Image 1 (spheres, one colour):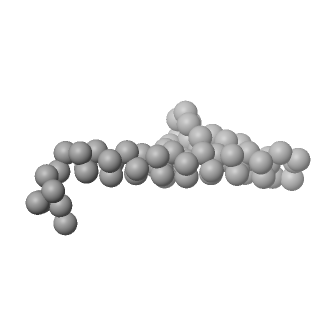
Image 2 (cartoon, helix red, strand yellow):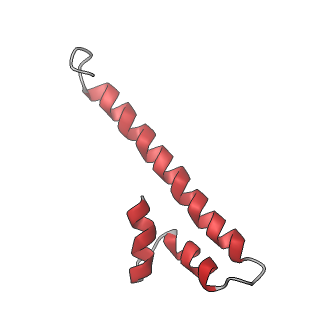
Length: 67
């Protein structure tokens, strides 16, 4: 998910655009809000994807093989 934020630096779509727009407009009223919105969005998505991977692992790996 961190790579998705960096992709915005290369003009890619995503939540990274919010972060870079906020950094570019430092000093304005909404700059910190944009940076926080992008950062928190990426953190929430990363946690959701991690939980999904753990759930998939528990459903697909037999109990005897799990470490």
